[in-house]
Image (spheres, rainbow, N blue to C red):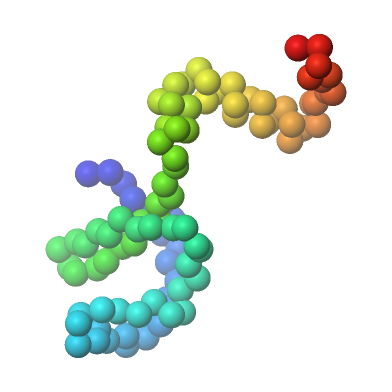
Amino acid sequence: MVTIIRDLDLKKVADSVKPDAKKRIVLSKVPVQEGITYHIYINSFGQIVLDPQITIPASEVWLFNNPNALASVRQGLADAAQGRVSKVDLDTL
C-alpha cells in the first residue's frame, strides 16, 4: 500500500455532516481547485481520504517517463529561479 497521508496536521473543516438521500456528502467548506480529481481511500474504521490528482496530456507523459529529460527540465527551472539565465538569439540556432 502506498503512503498517501503526507501531512498529519489535519484540520476539521465541518461538523456533523450527513449524507443526503443519495448517500452524497457536500464538501462546501473545503477549498477545491478547478481541474483536480480525487482518488478516494477508505480504511477499516470508515475514515475517508481524498487524494488530489491532476491529469497531464498524453503528449507530455514522455517527459515523466524519461528520467534524464525530467532532470534536465528541473535543472533548467532551478537555474532560472536562481537567475542563472542568458539571452539566446533564436535566429542563430
